[in-house]
Length: 107
Image 1: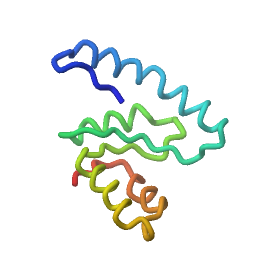
Image 2: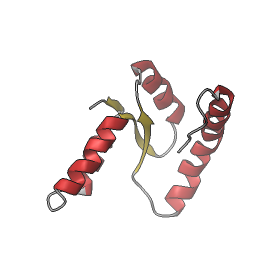
Image 3: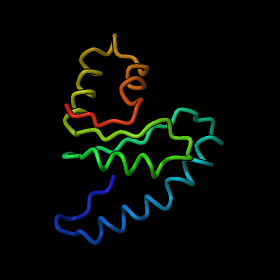
């Protein structure tokens, strides 16, 4: 996870650029070689825009990534909370269903 000091915009840009350079290679070669066939690219944060999703989806075209999603931090916290509270009923297939399809998961 990238957590630079507040106000350090240059550091954030450098980290994002590093991810852009390395992600396609890792996804295209390393993960399939390790037998990982279902790969989702999820970005957790807040305040996502549809335009951001469109650009990231276009960037990831041609890689083995099944889909791209932006997930609000609250949605992730809710998902984790549900998995703990309903651990007997919770299935990983539910996460697969949730993440599939290029989308923004708000709350």
